[in-house]
Length: 283
Image 1 (cartoon, one colour):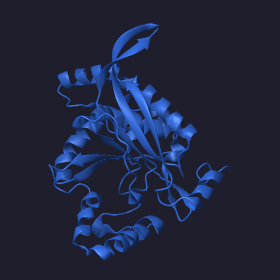
Image 2 (cartoon, one colour):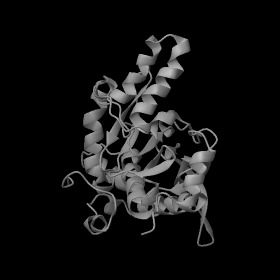
Image 3 (cartoon, one colour):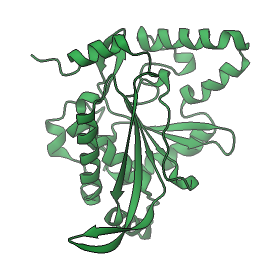
Image 4 (cartoon, one colour):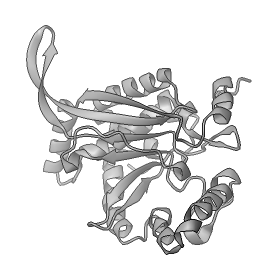
């Protein structure tokens, strides 16, 4: 049986590149989200406080699970380890005191309405630090004398990621930061951002959403205006190559064109998906 995770390129690049500084690659994409925005507006009129972030969580998760499941992994001691589940981490601002996060578990098997509800419920506790210990415990480093901070960080990373041992008191393990990260900078008025890959997070990519704007586009030989959302990705090249980035991009664009499908549970696709779910998905 072919090991689609430990390919020759990944085995070689895990030895060549460090974690992940040399191996960063970037990509940008403009997506027509006119129809998706209309779907969001219709949901908001029905009392569901949905945003394009919620829609994109579902689109991104399903793109990974159903079209490029081989990137749902991380590198440990020179080898590639597949993740059993697919969770999307969304950074959440802490009212001027930094950033914490909310993790949507099994996001590929969820409806947008369910994702919207979960993020709304988790965000207040996340801002208070109760939701994600891993994100909050970065402040523990502030109390460690400067010469020792990097060694302590490297030790924690070695224990949790390289050795696969959970530190329950700190809420840290190999999956503390989810499977992939989705960040929204468009709400801050920014259009494009080339973000970093946090070494301890062990995610293959961070996807950034920019500000949605009305722009002229050509459709069937005529110029019209559409609502365009810029998307930027930072990828760990030890895991993700150009062909996989292309498949991911095409799948996200395709998924965003059918928001109604994203708001139903994809039972047919889940039946043949290699990513597990923890329990029966919520409608």
